[in-house]
Image (cartoon, rainbow, N blue to C red):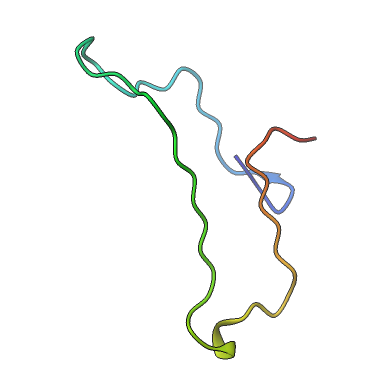
Length: 54
């Protein structure tokens, strides 16, 4: 995982399940920024990229 051009997390071979009876059938990514009025707005442009980019 990269944040502001700096690698902040690297994990090889993560274990998501330790039993064959449980399967992962999807992955969900979500972002949220803000609230219900302009006081929550960002002071700068924001960008998120869930794909591998270089």
